Every structure is written in structure tokens, then in C-alpha cells.
Length: 250
Ligand code: 13P
Image 1: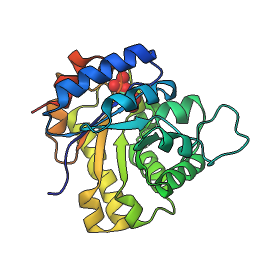
Image 2: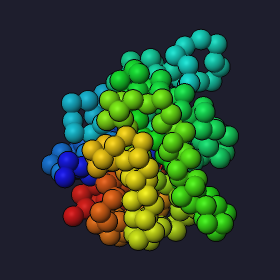
Image 3: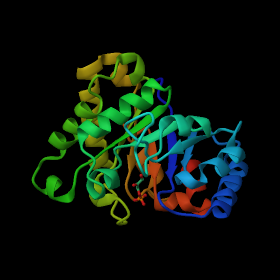
Image 4: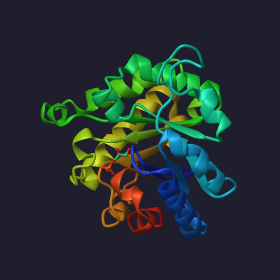
């Protein structure tokens, strides 16, 4: 199997520069002999600080969003060119907080995905259903739509730089994790969608992370599932005490 585990920390809107530097430095030390692929995504204002600390280490630098345009009159937005300039390698797109709080739709997310890929970034495309969608039996429909529309126009070559993160919205920041079995069912389904769109080989290769209240005590059970290839961690990524055990699960 060509897939590897990929553990990512999404720091969301937390930490000052000094706090980000402290955590990044601690993770560099703790994860230097880690066996998996790692990423941390600080707030925009802290990217430059963290970049200097993790450059040349086994931790990749991520951003949590980008603008759908390269440059121009876009007050309050941050461009892929600016992110490239800071050494960002990966951009998280379509996070549920972007979709549901800031009303980003599939078309906008798709535009960002294509722009980021065209500039050589790796993209973590987040998908996932709301609680009411799960209760209405619409999990597959929602995840399929977000996957298909998010990847519209993405070539098979560019797909090699795409990671999917399944983050059921009801599990984010709530302490309610999907059971390994429930998550696995969705991951297997999403892999089938990728296989249908891009073929057998691409379906086998794509990394699908799980996100939503991943903690040190549930990481290993989730990662043991056949189609779960890593984690996108929010709250537990803010401290070494909780992120390192997840990053070093066995
Ligand atoms: P929590 O780990 O805090 O539930 O957040 C998950 C998430 O949204 C990561 O992107």
C-alpha cells in the first residue's frame, strides 16, 4: 500500500506569535523522530514566525485558507502568492467553519482548490455533514457533492497533491467523535467516489484524514481503520501534551 499516515494540526484562530513559536519549537523537538507525515497550520499572522522554526524539519507548513484570486482589490483576503512567499506548502480549504460560519459554497471552494493547486500547493479539502444531514440519512449525498464539486476540473496529476479530510461537523470541537466504524464507512464511500472520478489507482492512493474531536485516547482506534489515513486535529493540536501522542500513535 502506498498510503502513509498524515497527522495535521489546525490551530484555527488561536495563539500569539510568541505562543505559536513556543509550540512549533516544542513540536520540532518532539516529532523529529516521528514516523508519519506532519503539518501545522497557524493563523496567517503567525505563519512567518512558525515558518522560520520548522523550515527544513519533518513538519510541513500549512495555511487555513486563501483567497480565490491571485491578487487585486480584495480587502481582508490573503493571496496564494503571499502564502508561497512565507514558505507555506499546504492550504486547508473548505473547512466546515468556512462553509457554515463564513458561507463559502462549493463553487468558491473549488475556485480556491484549483488556484492553490495551480501554484504548486498541496490542498487539504475538508468535507463533512451537519448533524441534521446525518439524521436525515444524507451523509453520503453531502460528502459526495462536496467531493465532486470541490474537485471539479482538477486533473489526475493535480489530484496527487490533494488530501481529503472528512470532518463531520457535529464532531468538531464538541468532544463527540464519530465511532471508528462510522468514520470508516464514510471514508470507504469517499474513496469509492474518488475511484469513480479518477480510477482505481487514484482511489487507492488518496489520503483521507479524519477530523472531529481526535484525542490521544481515540487516535489509534481511528487510525486502525482501513480507509482512515491520518487526522486533522483542532483543539488537541494546541498543546504538545495532546498533539504529540496523536502524532506518534502506534
Ligand atoms: P477539533 O479537533 O477541535 O474537534 O477540530 C477539528 C477540526 O476542525 C480540525 O480542522
